[in-house]
Length: 268
Image (cartoon, rainbow, N blue to C red; front, side, top):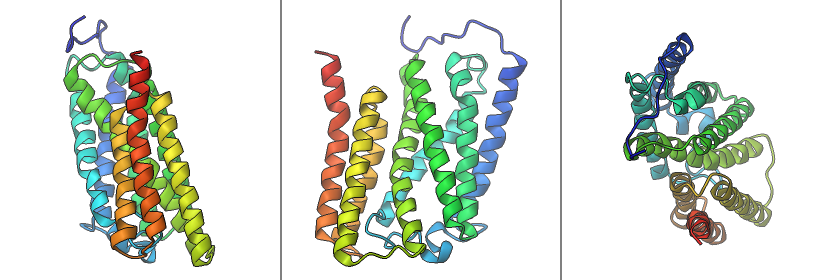
């Protein structure tokens, strides 16, 4: 089968149509949540929860520019919503495998933005962990149902790879912030040691993703992006820490190297 040839061989069912509608409604909800999160109809994320989620809130908070990664992710989610409505896509096995997970991820995304508006940080941890697990399962299913063309691969695998990678880093930052806001306030040295441990765990997670998900570049790039901006934030902004900044940059390199190693081993 040539690249770009769609594998659909069945007529769309009522379940397919229901899934398409579900994804579309979830996208609408996600857009509303995003408008809240960027401050159009609510308080910006970095200003919500008393500023606990700002770029300078903790030693593992990514610097502000890191959050620009949401632009390609949100555009990709919109693109996927339109893509899955194309006539030849309705009964495609990949959409059947991931469609409802896509919808759940968008609902959780918007839900996270809404609970942080209320300052419910522990609720935000529950939501973002659920989001990370949902995306992990989603990308795993993409691995089980190979892409059928380059365009589809860029839109679907690229979007959800970036989504998973970034949310994984955001989860680490979210949990750390919540612990600190709950009264866990170690001294400077202990805080730096704990931050280094957290970054090592993030790097290890990136390596695990590479091994379990076929060395997906989009996942690695998004994680490395977040880790690199953590590094920049600690080296060039507050709270400053040369140790944490340096370790974050090393972690970014480790995460980027992992898929290269996996792909190289697969060809030997």
